[in-house]
Length: 512
Ligand code: HEM
Image (cartoon, rainbow, N blue to C red):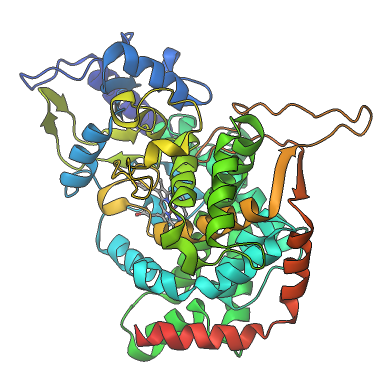
């Protein structure tokens, strides 16, 4: 007997029950758009760029909104205070993830840290990340951020991919058309679509996965996603372990086999390391591309001020380096403003709460999907001042012009699920932004037919887990003859002894 239809009907009845029942708590749910019976707010759920709709709703309903999608409570948080109070301070309750059947079970077979619940398996995977990407070890990897940002002037995506592949697998990505890199980008785009909350019927009714393949087209897509990912990950891991040079895969592999201090099944470790590549690639590259969009579309006063600082501190006969960082506060302010103005993950990643709880007089039902709307949080005028839609790095600096204001961080998420790659990401973005500003005048690209600048729309972007600027044309003109001199004098980075650099970084890392 086929159980699937029966289970589907039971799930639907439970859904109807949940949507129509009165809350057992004496406290009300947070406010939100008026739901309909059974479907709740399904008809009002945004089809794209949800963070913008949620931002509008927050102006009408306040900082904590409740939405009901076929019985599933969704809580949207639109202030730093609410996001921090719930997701960080009450981390013991709010560190699970919603159950997204398609992305988690079908496409990742439960192996991706991003959508694991906060349990022992998650903590084991988090150790894999934190042990190699904490603040101290991130500082040890700076030589590769320096090297790749020098090569970067040729290609942003390749440079970001190459830095992370070097550290994790011991090899560089030398060509932006490398088929492996293209496959990674395509898979990330597909995954970003898989994790859209509420977009896939099978997440609401996992039982539908029992339907035959022609009625459940997501099955083949997810299976293909998983097998392609595994193939890429296994191949890169094999290269890493066989390489002569130090790399993070080798480090974890040794720990896992010799010391057994990780105690993780090998296939799970291989997968986790691949997840790091995925997580590192998109958000970092996209933040850098948003910086280019800011240079083209926003008031260029910030470029003038940054160059003045760079000329005074660095001069014109070398590229900026991490040692200059304490003396370049305006560059730090630009980096923070990129994260605020265009947070690469505008809704971070959803959390879920394992217990019902109350907040500010509202009940938050157990198992709610809790979305920190980083987009809205980054636009809180009470925190960041007026004109939140404009790119104004100055808002980050104290009156002395040197100290960064301690605005609450949002772009890397919250509490126990905060991005473990944040130190590494900040280092990459800092050096690339500093070197781009030092080297180039970044402007809109020119039309081949008319020779006129092609306007760039700063709002045009994709939607999904990651917010990516739609393709546009940009022109990078060296600021002056000294730029070419310095870049050519430092030589082609491919002539550097990469294995020796890795072994040196590995040696430094092991001493930490
Ligand atoms: C600008 C670059 C980056 C941004 C904006 C970013 C942002 C985020 C956000 C918002 C989350 C979810 C946090 C939450 O649930 O509260 C996250 C998770 C994660 N990030 Fe990043 N990230 C970036 C770069 C990186 C890098 C470079 C790495 C690795 C080296 C990395 C590895 C991860 C991992 C493994 C997770 C999953 C953590 C978990 O579920 O507990 N990220 N990131």
